[in-house]
Length: 217
Image (cartoon, rainbow, N blue to C red; front, side, top):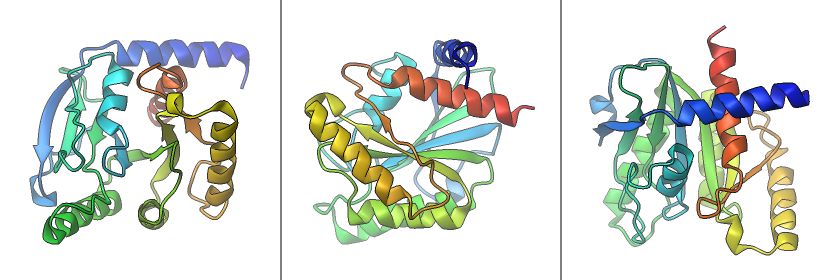
């Protein structure tokens, strides 16, 4: 990709997320999903990995997505879009792998996540968030398996990279990319981000702007 193309996508991404993003819908079940419209991009990850913080950083709106230091607080599929614009929606998914919640509740959240990933025709991409301090866990690999079966493109996003030393981060990126080599549906490269320092946000916005551009042709 040329520098000029990169610059155009970065600017397109900036404009895309400078818009007035707002909460529009919450779905506790597949039966209550909103009607499909435009493209949807979902953010999945273990509880407390920083999905809501990432969405807030992307949109520049600290209070858009609900954040909490208590894992397991997001129990629904949360949808965001720009009023009057139906080209793109963001979906904040329930965190998975939270062992302290009742088993029946964990099973319900997990079923919701997997059914959504397998059956949503408007879902164009999933960003699977992984804590850079810990790397991929078995529960993440279960979700990657579902995504492999769903034919939805997905990419790993490392979060909280500001809390990891540079050498450790490079090792984490390398081991994650090595694991992704076993998943042909996955993007081979990993995005490294920090909601606190805004590291990687420009690249992530540009990637979504590129997807929107490609799908609108």
